[in-house]
Image 1 (tube, protein in one colour):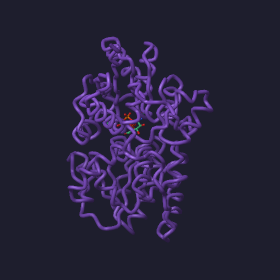
Image 2 (cartoon, protein in one colour):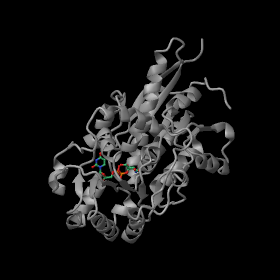
Image 3 (cartoon, helix red, strand yellow):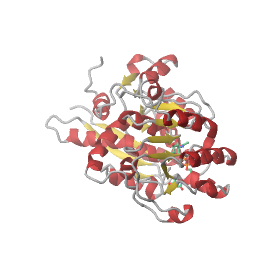
Length: 387
Ligand code: UD1
């Protein structure tokens, strides 16, 4: 009889849960099929994110089970956070003896668990491999490069990912172009949203509301949605103030809904910038479903998130990326994404064009079709014939 493969799935921070969920759904579905695959799996939550809105709510939204292991890593400096995950994850690996560890995205947990597993000679699979911003001041870029350099299975979302990996010496055999797993979750969740009223931001937490001092109001037809959390945008008073001032200007034309990340919230308070948020509708972090209900009908999304650049491209919504670079070039070349830089001036220049009707018509990139998890599980369970 064949050896039964044991897979550990790792998630740690908010943008990981939507990438792990489709794999869980697929593995569950396959285990119920008559000729089921010979795979068992367990879920590890590193605890990099721990607040209800940053973590637990996603388990409910995506119908995924409670994790088998919670590592309670919490916040801290990069070294503190990464090392805490490594110490705890090593214990799990030694106990479970997995054949494959699956990591997703580019957060500190991704790096910590891939390195830990590889040093125990466990195979590593990286979902969302090969993306490169070429900006080494981004912690995520370091996480991506290190993780890819030691991964055995490299699952890529777009052509640039495969090209980058080949350039870095990876072989074609290791690289699997499977499409974008986040879009699996997007399609799954759109069905849930369809049964609800669109565009109503729901309060999931009251503390932030008090802190930010704003009440959600009724949504007009034309509105924008903003998210900002990158340290390079929100950890500097002048930079954050400049971006918020530009948003104030745009808010004269349309309502702006702004679910505020904990890092950004802390900094708005610390830098005493609350006066620049008066005309914005500040919301606490939203659940995936609530947030999707909001942005899917927006006229414009402004963000520094990686995932939202892709999700807006998948639904054809104009997106201004408040960054100087992107590791996801297909969203610009084919999608609705525009890099607008990180200054208020840059944001407003792009906004004036948008207002004048010069908007990008995008198309959905190849294999962003909601079936990516199926392709990944096929490869991992050894049932995929290589093309
Ligand atoms: C992390 C990821 C980033 C990802 C982002 C999504 C790294 C290097 N960065 O950045 O790639 O885009 O998550 O959110 O892995 N905090 C809370 N509650 C929580 C979690 C954090 O209040 O549940 C606070 C912490 O006190 C901390 C701040 O938010 O000060 C930032 O959290 P941290 O996990 O360090 O980084 P993110 O900015 O969230």
